[in-house]
Image (cartoon, one colour):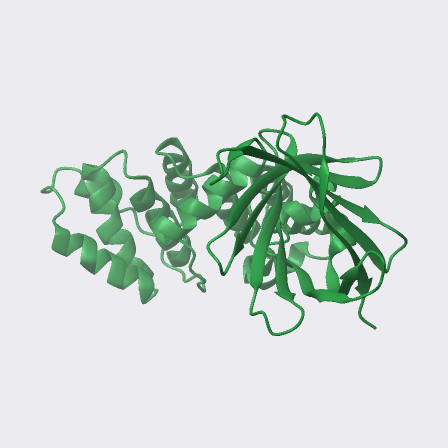
Length: 321
């Protein structure tokens, strides 16, 4: 599902497909009459795009009809032809164009959502829900369109609609609903950080969710006037089935950790990394929650392959009130 959603969003960004419109009447068949005309030019593609963006649906349908007659594998043009035909009220032709767009590579969720709008306009609720459900299953991730597209107005009171909205919201922010991605949420917040013995302040840290709740970002500033600060980016890697942290600071340092949540503790390790003195340093970093308002951050290092370990630092994070 994550890969479907990624491809879905990438296609929207690169192709610029989304457009809202108000359907008009006057169905006309353009495609068969245009098949024998000349190959479309760059100027024609520009004019087609201008008509599409202006929501001049009859003109856009004519231009994209000609383009698709000459470029059968142009999924973007087929999709825009379908939207334009729907805009003129030519629903059956729009259905055929949406089906062609999917065959030519338009992501399933996009094409299926378009089909759902057409069937909703035809007052065919069952087929509209069939394609809404398919679109949601195949990565459609625009809940705002579900709320705003007027073709769906009569469907929103149906219990099936709420389930489509829920799945679409999950598609928009998949990490927010994935249990693995939520394992490190105990660290989120704003913290006063002290040494483990409580004798002196160590710094301040703000831990926050970014990038659709897929990444936990650390913003660290050391105590005093030493001017040291850094950030870490923590995310669950679904391909390797592990957590990873990338730390970078304002002194040019960088550390890559990887690990897992084990017995409630986020348990990170590094590979053996060559040091300037010729040794190889392996690190073991743990985040140990103690209730909702305290986390211990305990770092150890080894230069003998893990036979012996020395403490690098031992901090207590106390949640700011």
